[in-house]
Amino acid sequence: MGFYLIFAILLPLFILIWGSLLPYYKPPSAVGLSLVSLENYRELFESESLVPVIMNTIILGGVSSVTIMFLSVLSSWFIYRTDIRGRKVLDFIVFLPYAVSRLAVGVAFMIVSLSFPNPIIIPSG
Image 1 (tube, rainbow, N blue to C red):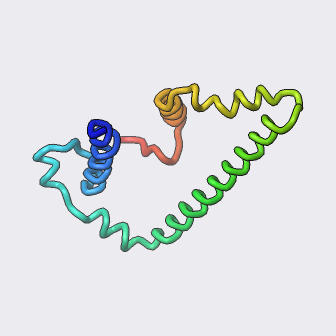
Image 2: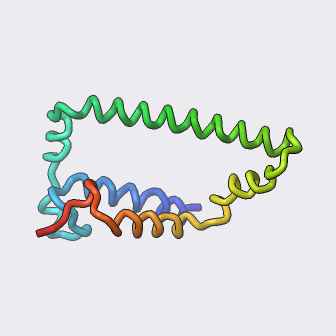
């Protein structure tokens, strides 16, 4: 359990905090330690766009969670309470995320997002 705690929770959290304290990402090292500052957090809290970003996050989280809950209840009702044709297909589609590895889905999303220009990825040069 300690191994899981360290590798699944503490190390990723450390890297997120480490990256947030640097002006640009640099792997943990003595050289990187000299660049650590709270400047990014100062700029964040001085930014005028902080409140709209937080509101968008709350709205997106609330709407998506309620929508997923509604779709889950609706699909389970159709699968277990009705005799309509195609309910086995719906059951298969609902449980498909359990069959496909999260790593495979993450790699697929990475390939798709890197295959065309988008505003998230800033081109170098």
